[in-house]
Amino acid sequence: MHHWKVWLTTFAVLGIAALLFFRTGMGTDLGGIFSSFVVKLNPMPTGNAFPIELQASLSKFQGSNYDVVNISVRATGICIGTKLSSSMDFEQKGGVCKFSADSASGELGFSNGMVVLDTDVISAKVRPESLLISGLAMNKMSLLDVTGSMKTFRNKEWDLLLLKGDNIDASGVIGNMKIEGDSVTVNALVVSVKVDSGDGSSITING
Image (cartoon, rainbow, N blue to C red; front, side, top):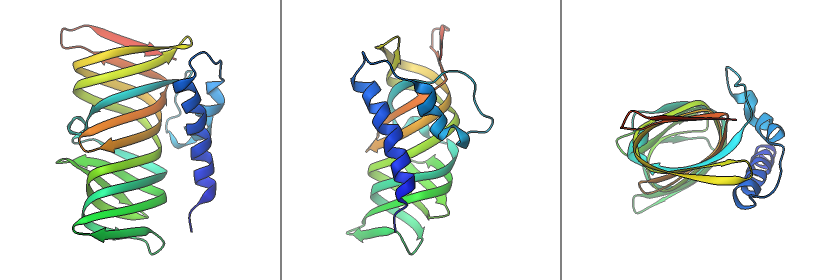
């Protein structure tokens, strides 16, 4: 049976965040949104939250590992070494698996182009065709040599920054990660983000 309370909270957070992403003129109290999931972070971050949308390649997450609490996962791809609970929706045909998991806690990692889940609900290595992780809460997300883009929402408007081999450090990250093949999109609330460019310049954005 799905954990409807977890989904209700997740959809509430993402629904309000979506309004921020697409209705840029609206004034919204981000403090209430952020506090819905901030209890997952330790130590608890200080500062005001603001939305970002980060687009990068899956290879830039190589070697990253995150502790996760009560995440939801929807995935289609090639699965290796799968262990799952009896309550999970899981099917596998022609070497391609499809599954969904709710309220999973443990570790999320990235290795050799694969997403590695080691949780109390499912343990698997997935080479994703499509994968959505909802309810992520990370104290810090650090990526090196990123080529892609990052949008930040501040003062009722979006600012677009094109990334060309930049290093990214985001703190107090709460949101979603969507993976399609080698493309990763992170929609999240953060309290700060720092961009270090290859030319030695640096930009820090605080909430």
